[in-house]
Each structure stands twice: as C-alpha cells, then as structure tokens.
Image (cartoon, rainbow over all chains, first blue to last red; front, side, top):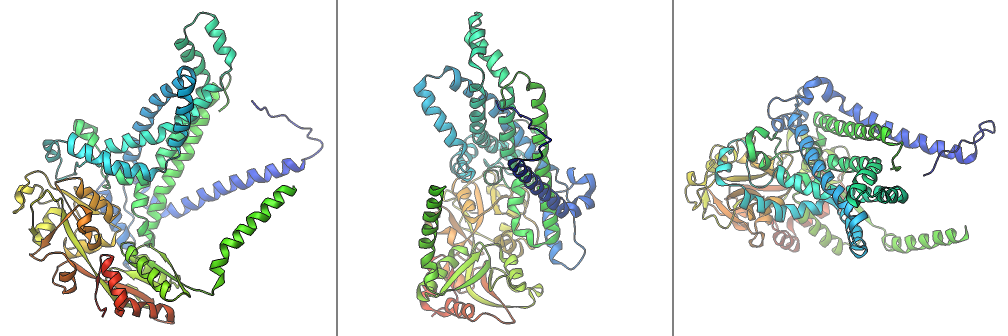
Length: 329
Length: 274
C-alpha cells in the first residue's frame, strides 16, 4: 500500500513533480482531445436525430445503406438513424457474458488462491494469463469453424427455423455463440485480476478468522472475498470494457444483421442473430468515404467511448465505500 | 548509464543492418488502393512484376473500390483497382479493363440443386422463397439459409444491381465480412446458399457452384461473357499526369502471357492476355 506523502509546499515544485504534472497534463489532454474530436465528427448525426438516435424505428441496415448512398449523390445527405437494435445487441451480449463470467471467475479465483494444490496452481495461473492474451480473431475463427456449425446443425430444429424465417435466419450465428465465446474471452481477465486481489488480502485476517473456529469456506467467503471487493470491481470493469469494444469476434459469430433479438420469442431468442455497435463500425469501415456515413460511424464510436468513460466512473464510484477495509486495486 | 548507451548502440546497429537492403537500390514505390476482393490476385501480380523489375515496389491499401477512386482523384494513390464500371462521379480519372472476374452462386455439396434462374436467385435473397421444396431441382425440403456479403462489399453492390434489381437483400440473409467466411458458412450448413467470387468456389473450398440460367460458373463461360454474373476489374489512374511506371504495369497485366497465367491461377479470368 503506497500512501501519498505530502512534501513541503513552500519549497516549490521539484523537478520530479514538474515532470509528473506534465505527464498527467499530456495524458488527460490526449483523452479530452480524442473525446472532443469524436463528438465533433459525430455531431451531425446526433443533431439530426435527437434522442431518436437511441430509439427504434425502421430497419437499421436499410438506414445505413441510405445514409451511405446519399453521400455519393449531390442531393442533401440523409442522416435518419435509429440505433436501438445495435445498442440492444451490445448491451445484451456484453451484459450476459459479463454476468456469467463474473460468477464463474470468482469461483475459479477462489479455488486457485485458496483450495488448489501447489502443482495445479502452477499450471492454472500461466494458462489463465495466456488465455487472457489470445487475440479475439482466433476465438472468432474457432467459433465459426466449431461452435456455429454445432449450434446450427444440432441445437436448432427445423420448426424453430421456419417459425421466424421471413424475418431472420437461425443457422448458428447468433446470441448463444456470441455470448459463450465472449464469456470465455473475458473470464481470464477477471480471473487474473481477482486472483491478485484475493492474494493481497492480509494473511493474518484470514488466520484470525480460522482461529475463531470458522470453517475455511466461510472464512474465505466472508473475509477474503469481502476484503477483495475493490479488485472484483476493477476486474469486472476491465472485462466489461473489453466486451464492449469487442468487434472482430462478434462480427464473425453474432450474425451480421441489425436485428434486436426479442426475449418474448422464448428459447429461439438465444439463437437469433444481431449486430452490436462495435461490429457495425467494423462492418462499415469501407463506407467512410461517404461524409454522412462517416458522421454516423463517429456517432456510434462516441456512444461506445462515452459508455467506456461512464463504466470507469461507475467502477470508481462503486469502489469508494469499499475502500476502507478493502485491498487496493 | 553506460550500459543503456551500449544497448542503444546495439539497437541502432540492428536497425541499420535490417534497413540496409531496402536502401541498397533506389526503388520506385507505386502506391495503390482500392478493391479488397481483388487483393489476393493483385498481390501475386505485384510480386511477379517486382521480380521482373527490381526497381519497382508496390504498396497497396485495400480500402475498397470506391475509396480507391477517391484516393486517385485526390492524388493519394497513383493506381486504384475497382470492380465496377466507371461512374460520372469518377471525373478526373482514366479507367482500363484489366481482367475478368465472376460471382458464383454456391450451395452445400449435400444439395442436389444444379441450376437456378436469376429470378429464383432474386426471390431467395429477397426473402420471397424461403424453403428448398419450393425451388425445383433440390433434394432438400428445409428452410433456405441465404448467406450474403455486408453492404460495403463490392460483391454485394454487384449482386444487388445484377440480381436483386437494386433492392436490398432481405433481413433473413446472413451477411458475412469476407468471401472466405461465406464459403465456410455454406460448407457447414447443408441448407445454405451464397454468392462468392470465382476464386472462392474452387473444388477445395467445400462448396458447389450452381449454373445460372443454365450457364455454369467457370473461367470459360466468364471469358466468353455468357455467364450472367461476370464483371470486369478496372484499373484507375489520374487523367492528368499519370505515372509512367504505373502505365507500364497496367499494360503488363493486360497483355503479358505470364501475367495471364498468374491471373488464372489466382482464380480470376484473363481477358486480353496473349
């Protein structure tokens, strides 16, 4: 735990402090410049649609095509865009994947830190770190070659396919494949951070609890995991940020059509295709040559960037009340 | 301090050694951009041409055909490659047909379908025909899984104007970001149908091409221009001050015998090569 030690103010700023100040200014300045640039480029799309930008209405893929082609014609550019299916897809896939990953990662981390024998720990930890750094396109390829055909040919029945056919296609590319693979992608990040947090819990707190006769499981749950909560928040924020920005793997697995899967459809809902915000940018980078399309893509980028900033703030805010008795993360 | 200087010196030495071969001969680098679908073929052509002319190197940015034309108009590229005929908005550029390519309609080998008409294909991709038993000639009866390309792909634009009559493909079409992913999706799903470039429908790709209006999709029918979905690939250069090495390269691609062999090996169709 490093604490901030105030130096004598009267003596003025030391050279180190000045350098630090510059560094902070440059980093914050870059961040603000990026935000301003993206928001500026996105403004026409937001100002034309107002809050309707975030709402439903029409077919989003048709709107994207109309926006793109209006850039080539000499007429007034079109901006009509209702991004709800894309927002819903990102929220749904990210949310479900992070929730599943959080539950399983917590158990795995507790197991690695407290219950695993040394030799197993020595294998598990490097494997988790390696998994956390596997490029997402590899997960995408494995998903396309293995998971998607498995789901499409064995889990989806002909009746289910026919029931939604004129609207969307159920062939394995959809929520289930996307959520499963995204969970596998973000869980190692969580496990790595959780393990570090759990390990930073002062040993004598745990020993104290055990000495009072409380069993090992309960001690770990009520003392160690509770103390490590800031690390749990930090790991979740990191993993959510990665899930939010994931584009390559999702564009390969979630199905490329702008459609909002409907939970009211029952089990079929899990097989329905959708396309998130980040994949939409990836799908349409070729269309950057059209000015209205450029503004629209920047608007999507702005929403993603804003979500990422809000996510960091939420993580920071959630950690405040836990700080007092928690480990630093 | 001293050791860090040594490391720096060693790094500099490594960089100099690695950089040396590039600096040894004065090279002209041709900057090109445009179609990503034609990039595999272009890369082979670039490589062969650089072998013949040691002083010419290429840098190609696959930013899409339309973007490539803009690059040439703005002077950012000396050469662009596009998969559609010239448009009035391409002012200031001169365009040459360089070779031919075809868009094949392909199904899973488990499907006995041998032939489709253009209007049947259109109905499938507009979501009007949704089951294989309403398509004559197929042994399947299940729901059709149409696979398409994302709306920015040149193949999509071409398919849209040549087959769909300018309409947008239906929402039950599963859009993929590359021809390879389309072929993979068709290979893994016996009810699938999709459209891919000729290079992606070779025997090894695991998909089966079907005839369109009774004409098979292969190099011969595309060269004779009898297959309905053939298209020319165009080279785009600035009308004012075109670069001489670029013009020489385009001539070589168009007429040279060896270039023709490379084009046909890569899965496209030579149009004018001897």
